Length: 373
Ligand code: UDP
Ligand code: MG
Image (cartoon, rainbow, N blue to C red; front, side):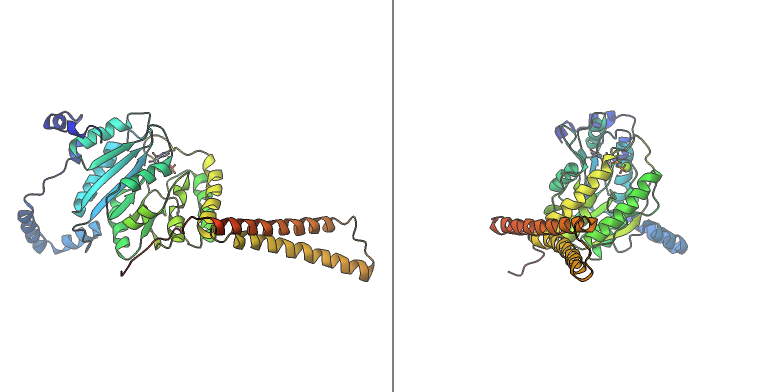
């Protein structure tokens, strides 16, 4: 952050209504003493211990020497930032791991950046990258991925709809051997129309991609480092990150997560999300699944269309000679011609695309998992 040198005691005292003090780093000094106290307490209250473990839901989550990076894209969300930071700090310090929180201010025109500055003054683990203008959520995520130093990267929205309490469960799932764990807003608090269109969107995407997820576009996701350093998110491609990762060979899964209603401000995506979503799915499929074998894509459409058209023409010809039914003037005749020509065109389009692919010097985008060299 630009003026991190400003950080001094005076600033901490002046840091506003006292709220940001809650995000201050807590020195973990009297730990052994506290541990003893806890042990005695648990000995006396066995039931409480069991209850308490259930609440934390992170038994056995060992994050020693691990860094967690939280990446948060935001656009005009001034009301949520302090509240979110306090909640995050509580969860992350509970995990006893090294952490950083990277806010990506996507060209906010409100007071968002000043709010982040306030938080950064009292806790330098909360960082910020501010864009000069609004580039979109995908660009913000991509910059966050680039900057993240963590072994685990968590992305979440800044509008308090995603719950920081889900972070331990997401990391636990990663530890089971997954590379990407996507949140699934099983009980969703969004407008009816959005919920329904989203169901269709998720079903279509699942079928096309070959990976069944109920909620591709959940803001809350966890990644291992390899994923975020290898995939490129641009345009409005953030909706398809699990698809991009899956098609690149990463192990992807989902877990149900709590979702809240938007507390402040309003959604930043209008009706255009539906159209753009469709175009982006075509791009994802094309650039990941078929880019190195375009003839498989165009060729199969072409062949199907050609065979259908040709079959009908053959049928009409047989009918003409066998039953003396005239071909001319029948609508079926024109449709069959159309199908045959379109089919041949698709096929040749595939061939041309194949030639371009073969002559391109670009090396395959191979992601290496492990080596024994
Ligand atoms: N966002 C962003 N840049 C944009 C639009 C949105 O960084 O151009 C952020 C926004 O501030 C929020 C997250 O992306 O933190 C999700 O946006 P929103 O809550 O509006 O989406 P919804 O929940 O309605 O899908
Ligand atoms: Mg939202």
